[in-house]
Length: 296
Length: 296
Image (cartoon, rainbow over all chains, first blue to last red):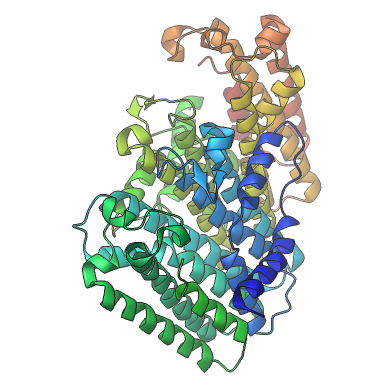
């Protein structure tokens, strides 16, 4: 099977887990349910849920507590996009060819739908405590989810990114911080939670965190590379938009060749660590490669 | 001691619990820490934390898991105010005589500070799992926190409130729904979590939920009453502002006398249920009375 088809199949597997946790659109507050479901169903490749499921499989996991975390992960990713698109933030009216949540439901509901998805993510993940009350791995997974989504994770990266806009002059360390937290943190959370619930030891969870961190960073640098070399049609956004937006990127810091080399090095390092573990999941390895070596 | 002094003293007790969980303002993302702390420290009477602590005391609680929940409760209340004040929502630049979070830090940081406080509330409360890993009351408390803060609680009420603005024509049932959820849900959560961590039985937690629900509703109806009869100076907002804003209120539905009677009835019912329990906390009873029978 080619990788794109396989990913689409895995996404449908993830969707089955996610959909069962989406709220029914009824009651006085049905608008918020509609806005939440609209946002989650608006598409996306379900990369984070798939990473969680496949890392879980890598460790031979069988816990029933996985599904609520898979759903929670996608809700958190989705809320971050909903708030990112708000007029006060990136002010985007269209995402993946569809009106963004606030464009469709109004700005107040846009704010509240993001809040609702974030809160509901925790409500959903906490349900795992009811499924397996004596499984301490659920405790660890909840703590990782909260930490990596918050101010020491995704939100932390997001804040520094907002403050660094229109600044070529930020340091390389600051750019690393943004990349590691804004995108990297949720990728780390996805793989770490899969490992934890799958039965990994603490040492193995640390290794998975390293794998995810390197892949997350490679993913972001590849974004910078594609912004410069990508083709407008395949990429779906104006090529060179980072430069137009006066955005600091790896390409600006290092030049195109070194940035490309860094993507390749980070990917190799990540996959070496993964393959050093005494378990195998060839699809997961392919997925990590695909995430960074994509051309769009 | 008079009740206002006693509340101020209890608030300082709550603040000691809350402050230890506020983030240090350092690192690349220090702006978000500053915005979070600014929002939490901007004042407020700490009613929800005090309700949690005093209900905990009512049941003779001694769990170390209380403090993180007290802090989390105030963070959730605070985030809801930060997002409520945004231009897309109520568009308030001043709260309690100080610039609102977005007025001080900009709108993007206003959105992110709310997100950060909500996520950090769960991160903080989840810390209780580390303090008492084998205390199942912590599981129940986490689930109540998430449920009452979310779409079946506060956010649900908030959404319907936003949709009902400038509508005299909403039904009484719809107004009840808004009142019970928008303000009531967090008051319920505060008292229920105090009871759960304090060692209450399921039946006692249900009774505490009823107490909180009645007090929450009485609190809101009293707001409507004060809007009509209050004195501009003591109330600090334009009297009759609800009417100017074309807001449906209990006074509009029932008239002033019946609304006043309902506040008195609900308060009596709540206190009767509380005093029927085989425990005593006279301050808690006074606090509930004070919450609804205030004149501002």
